[in-house]
Length: 378
Image (cartoon, rainbow, N blue to C red; front, side, top):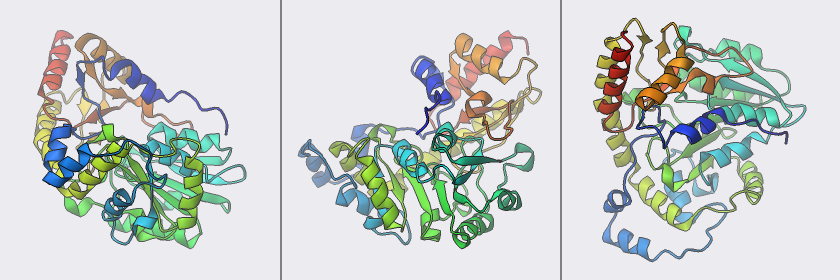
């Protein structure tokens, strides 16, 4: 594997995430305390947590965890699930299914690791740009034209990070069917699924739609439980999962036993947790609507279609990079500028920033931006 570049977003977060007073760019929903999570369970669950043995768990993930994950799909069994230490580990190993001589097609802009890891395999990689002027729509005709005889993997991310866009059901099903018909592996990062305020927008998970497809998910985003560090890949291709399980021996080997217990409990109550987090998003969105409506000369704002992130446009003359830098340094409000999502494969927007709308109580951050803009005499 070739040397990996710095992960721009994570380097940025290492500097600012725990130093800024207000993090307004988080891609996860509001977290819960350990006590709040345990309160969802029974007395037996709570005493069971105290009795956990702090030893190894199976590399595949424990039986109860895999059963709880499989229950979040329509057609999958526990044998169709491979657990990982967060979503990143699963993404890391899945992308290495491609290599020299293969072609990979992936959507941009996006979470950098999908692009960087694909390029590091030595495969030929093409970026399919989702365009703001087209409403971030997945253009299936452009995708078809970008396919090659050696295309081995198509990698997409819906709900989309950073825009929050979600394709319509017909387009997504057509993508799944196209990949299956051509013998191409479809990999869908679905970690933000579950926060759609309109339930009709929620896509069927790719692994439920095709035996060749792979779905990635995690407890971090729509469940708001990033501290558990439990992710998974789901696919009916068990030979693929077996290969990836062998690769996992070189990284985490297995998850933490307390994390697996808590993740199992969370997933058993997953609908209630996601409903709680959707309520937070529903409460927050009018606050963001009102804020951005005050500054039409500076911002173009559009609500996310799914997930709890979106990618507004900044129209100030100094540019979005300077705006975000000055905002965190002078007002303590963290936003993620467009450069953290840029692609080397296709042109991506340079005038946008990521906003997170899934954390409780965004008012102090919005007020701090208001004061910052007021001091600048905007």
